[in-house]
Image (tube, rainbow, N blue to C red; front, side, top):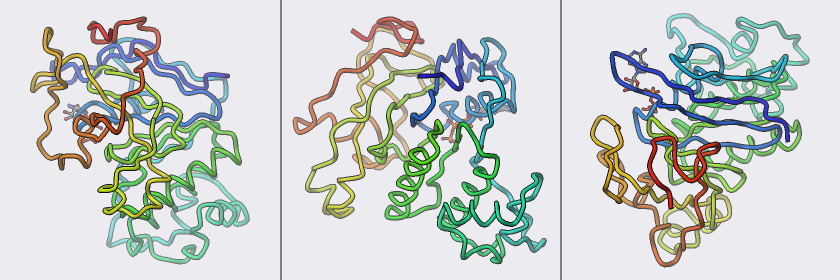
Length: 295
Ligand SMILES: Nc1ncnc2c1ncn2[C@@H]1O[C@H](COP(=O)(O)OP(=O)(O)OP(=O)(O)O)[C@@H](O)[C@H]1O
């Protein structure tokens, strides 16, 4: 399978802090890759480098010739004093005919919003419009920085279904950041856990069958949600640096609801969810990019 986009040894420092440490990553045609990681792990920094908005201090990014990227950033600011319709937003900074605009909005289920004021859109509606806007570029790869932000749980499932459908129809690659670690959709082919370095890479496993989970979100949710078994063999200090010699996860868990969005307290640690084998980060052999053993 063709690698559309590839990062080799990407490192970034900000103010003397190592934000990204020799990160390797690739996204192939037709696959969905999800980057997960705690706040401040460097996810957006990495994505901005992959898109070409920023440059790494070390390492390189390779893109296939003529690669068209449909990028939806984490934040999209609109000036609330300036009225802006969805139609206008769609063509802001890019050329597209009305038919193409309608087709793209139709594909993301947002055609009825064409004349709506952007400022009035709900979180889920806004994400659909931004996806449609990205589609106008006829992208080979969609890069989505937290596409489900501001979207309720039901809406998240719909949105992830939509993204999976786009991948299926267009055969594009998809790279997503998910901060809501408990929701990694079943269609995700590969999950990359980033905490300044690539902690681990693996396949989302085992649809959630936990009765408590189904009580919370409905039985249908279990069909959509895969839990990513998440098991680190090292710990991070408060600044994210790897602390050798310890075996628990050691991430900063503050701000996470236990068992909900904290990867390290997912039911995958339960007997119900025997952890599948973890792959080491690509290109790192049996050692991860942080230089510690995954055996
Ligand atoms: N231009 C910059 N100058 C200084 N520090 C920066 C800059 N950009 C990012 N950082 C810092 O790098 C770290 C990683 O930021 P980044 O936005 O990549 O994290 P993230 O994983 O996307 O976090 P979140 O999940 O909260 O969105 C943060 O501590 C941030 O403050």
